[in-house]
Length: 182
Image 1 (cartoon, rainbow, N blue to C red):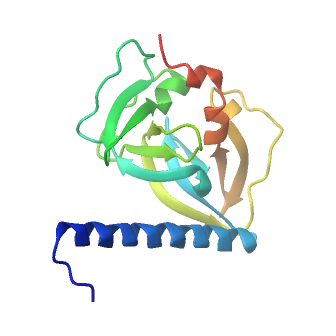
Image 2 (image 1 turned 60 degrees about the vertical axis):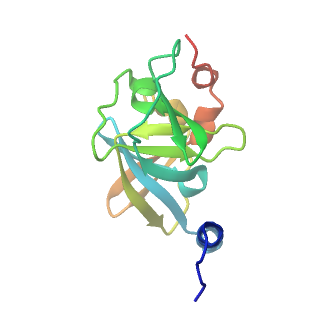
């Protein structure tokens, strides 16, 4: 058992736990990929469920109490929050895609994008957790008539349910999303 005598000991302990968690998550994802399986996060947006590949998210957390509005920004810019000492821009995905402002409640969550150049979070209606699949999603060429269609990256079925797969990578490459100023 590690002895904790100072604040520095606590910080070192927490850093070790975080590092082991990150390594464990990476191993789980790699193991799933090697076996042909696939893991994603199930979330709700505008009364529909979508999946986001686990590899495209950094973390999920509830909406913080303190969010600073960004002046002269588009309506879908929800604000900026301080997340463990880093400023995180937060975007209302429902407002961006459908023009409907999200109603924040105790189930609303923020998904942080795992992108090398863009550190931001997306406000979604609800997150249900991880879903594990025996196969990879199917890439679809058929475009649906919806505002979200350009950001979908296929679909996957399991137990008579079909989920569309949302791509943060496609969203992060959209110039309309990247230009948040009015």
